[in-house]
Amino acid sequence: MGRAMIIGAGGVASVVVHKCCQNSEVFEEIMIASRTKSKCDALKEKLKDSKTRITTAQVDADCLEELVALIKDYEPDIVINVALPYQDLTIMDACLATGTNYMDTANYEPLDTAKFEYKWQWAYRDRFRQAGITALLGSGFDPGVTGVFCAYAAKHHFDEIEYIDILDCNGGDHGYPFATNFNPEINIREVTAKGSYWEDGHWVETEPMEIKREYDFEGVGKKDMYLLHHEEIESLALNIKGIKRIRFFMTFGESYLTHLRCLQNVGMTSIEPIDYEGKKIVPLQFLKAVLPDPATLGPRTVGKTNIGCIFKGKKDGKDKTYYLYNICDHQECYKEVGSQAISYTTGVPAMIGAMMVMTGKWRKPGVYNIEEFDPDPFMEALNRFGLPWKESFDPVLVD
Ligand SMILES: NC(=O)c1ccc[n+]([C@@H]2O[C@H](COP(=O)([O-])OP(=O)(O)OC[C@H]3O[C@@H](n4cnc5c(N)ncnc54)[C@H](OP(=O)(O)O)[C@@H]3O)[C@@H](O)[C@H]2O)c1
Image (cartoon, rainbow, N blue to C red):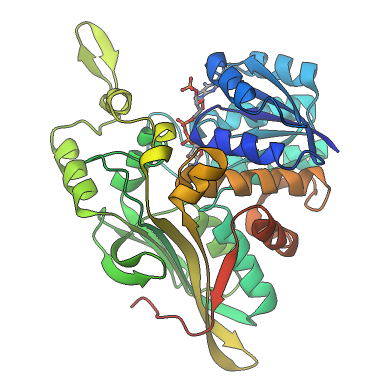
C-alpha cells in the first residue's frame, strides 16, 4: 500500500513501529526518524525479520529545513508524529511544504507555558485544505480512542448525548515509588495544571486535583480518580452537538500524589529556567533526566488499564446511559511488543489512525479531530489490532 515516516523513537514510537510491522500490507515501508538515531536503529534491529522494510534517520524535528529535506527525500504518504507536543507545529509546517499527510497523538504545547489548546493547530485548517492534505489530530487513546468512542456512541446509540465522563484508570504497578508511564515532562505538566470541565456552554476551572471521586473499574477494582483538564474535551465540546457537560478523570495512587506534592513543593516541577553553576536549566527537564525512562517500565509493570467513556443522553425520547471502554493488561502488552500498556494503548491507535488516512478511509483535506471521522472502521480495527472494546448499557454513573 505505501510508506510512513515515524518521528520519535520513544515508548509510543516503539509500539507504533511494532504495529506497523504487524500490518505490512498497509505499511510496506516505514522510516523511523528521531533525534537519537541509535534508538531508531535499535528498533529496526528488533524488527529485522518483518516484511515491512525499515529505514532510519537522524532528524531534529524542531528544525524545519531538516524535516523538509528528509520528507522530500523519503516521500512518505503520511508523517506519524510521536515525538513531543513541542514539535507539532514544525512538523505540520514540513508536511505543508512537502504536500504530505500528518498525524499526531497530542496537541501542541509551547515549551515555556503548560497550555493545552487546539487553537495553534486549528489555525492550519485553511492551509491544509488548500494543499489537499489531511491532518488527523490526537490519534492516541486519550485523546484518540475516547473521541472515536464518542463518535460511535453518537452514531449508533443516541439521538442526543448530554453528558460524557471520560475515565482513565491505570491500575498498573511498576514497583518504583515514583515514575510516569509516558514522557515525564509532558505527564507532570498535564497533571499539575489547573483542572477544567465544560458545562452549559462554558469552561469551569478547578484547582489541580480539587475534584476527587472513587470508581470501581472492571479488571482493576476501586480507585480514586481526579478531574483534570484534558485536550479532547476542547474538541468534543464543539463536535458533540447539544452536549451539556463533559469531564475527564484520571486515577492516581497515593504514592504518586505524595511524591508529586513534595517535588512541587521544592520547585522540581517548575518549567521556569534557573541558573545552575553558570548554566540555565529547567527543573522539570532535570527531573525527567533522573526519573525512570517510561520505555523501560514494560518488564516490571503488572496490572491493567481501563479507559473509556460513560454517556448519558436521549434515544427515541427516552433517557439512556452507555459505557464504552477497553481493558488492557500491562504484561500481555509486554509479551506482545515489549512495552507497558500506556505506550501500547497510545501506539495501537496511532498506527490505526495512520492506516485510516493511508487507505483513504479517512482522507479529507483540512485539519480534523478524530471524532470528525466515521468511527466504524476504526472501531473494527481496534478489535483486530489488540484493543478490543467492551460496552455496558447499565453503568454506574459518576456523581
Ligand atoms: N494520546 C495519548 O493517549 C497519549 C498517551 C501517552 C503519550 N502521548 C504522546 O505521545 C508522544 C510520545 O510519548 P512517549 O512517551 O513515547 O515519549 P518519549 O518516550 O519521551 O519519546 C519521545 C521521542 O521523541 C524524540 N524527540 C524529542 N524531541 C525531538 C526532536 N526535537 N527531534 C526529533 N525527535 C525528538 C525523543 O528523542 P530522544 O530519544 O533523543 O529523547 C524520543 O525518542 C508525546 O507527545 C505524548 O504526549 C499521547
